[in-house]
Image 1 (cartoon, rainbow, N blue to C red):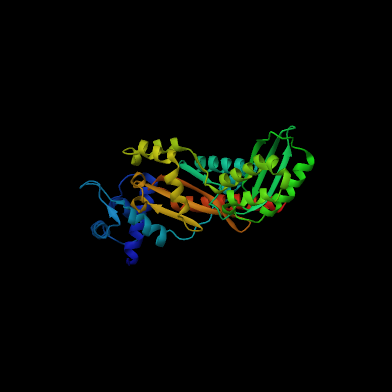
Image 2 (tube, helix red, strand yellow):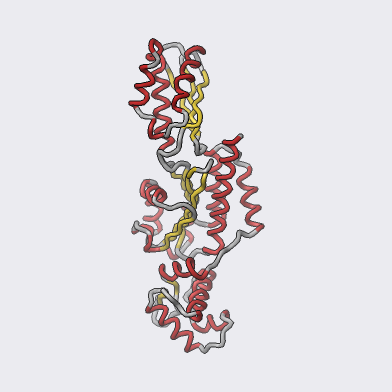
Length: 340
């Protein structure tokens, strides 16, 4: 859609004023903020044309204009320009996240809390993007004579553990043999760790197979857990503060709570920052909302996503670089932890 420079400036001004005030924007208001030699009548005509193009809407006959989903999209794609994160906010994010350490669970939990607090929206975070991650390490730690803890670490920094119990004694020689045999799984994708693979390993264990079966089952279960997306939510109650969402806010919160459709939305996102606005979202519960999601990478692999859900009236110019910075920071911390 091609717009004249005048229309672009008027559309940008309407979007930015509406984001700031939440009130429909009229021609008199635009005269105050636009550095253009235009009459109020000319601005009204331009706004009427922008409305006919589907970029602005007029809630009431006598009211000013507000952006439509298409209007926000045009603004984000063409008018907003490249933005940098504010230095003060950058330091605030770094300070808040630094206390979480390098444990992926704690780090993602803290990142979600920071994002919800920073944006006043609902925040979503995920640790895994599916079966393509590979096994980096499998460790066993004896807990008792018949119990051991299995620890599985993936190439994307996911750490899973489980206590396993065997009817047979779990001796040090048994654990050493188990470690040597399961080293064959290192480098395999999580999707390759299935019952067939484990049966093949068990067959190679000879007389130790029966004793090791609970441990092998534990590895299979941990790989399956690590391969499935774990969606975390923070700050859902923030959505109650937006009058634009009043009509369906409880339906929206219930939709987010269910997790599965949100996980579908996340997995379909492309690399980098993905922004879906209003009715661009495939789910009707999100038709009054915007979703900003950003993928982070760990060890040069997709590791998961961070993002937010809020009303379409978001300060995109501020929030997009903030979400991206937080996402990149999480990926950097997890990658560094794996290298160490």
